[in-house]
Image (cartoon, rainbow, N blue to C red; front, side):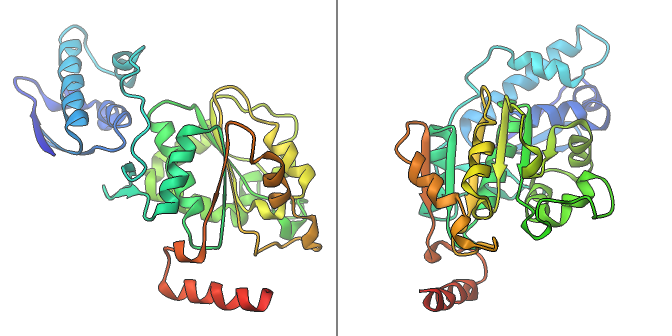
Length: 312
């Protein structure tokens, strides 16, 4: 559905806020809605429910502006205070979130749809399968969606730095610089969904955090979406340590590829062992991707299958 909202008898800047901060805060509550503001017209594209609710909130903002000098993002927060109608689990094939160019990000195959459904129905999701199946990308999209809808307060990304033996002190730079080479795939996905300046602000204020797996011990992660990537490179003890960091109102997503274990002794990998221990617990769901689910270049599917014949 497409809808146009017109701002009548009021300067748009008074509603959009300085640097469009108020408008961006409002759009954050509607991650599935494409919003384009041009002057006093706001073009909406999405579900009828989202379009109508967005128009309703704009009307409320205009009324609030007439009662005070300036609007702030906190005024947007007040509009949704105690309103649970905006928090819902979408259909598995619905838009998860919109990327920077307005392109909708949604599940691209049945297994990704299962992963999306599993996230909304469970607090711990394992997503296991070959490279290129979109496990990490979908996990990031779900985390960004939750952050935009204020369902969580932070995103925590962690990945075992196996090549450095989890001892990163000899690498130059601060903690972020040391981990960047290992967390690059996560950053790439984040940059597809969050504007660069906003992402930098999130990194600075701790809304988006990076944490080496070795440094996770002792933390309690509340109101967060926490993603452990490349989990096949953790042993069972590390996996247990990570999973027991789960706090109240937290979502944990564990992704990995059992065919790409970089540990010196592949038998030490704790991913599949952990899944075997936890798969029957309520609140835990395991999603298994196959080579047929690969969404990268068509050759990747053939490459994965070719290497599988050798490994077998």
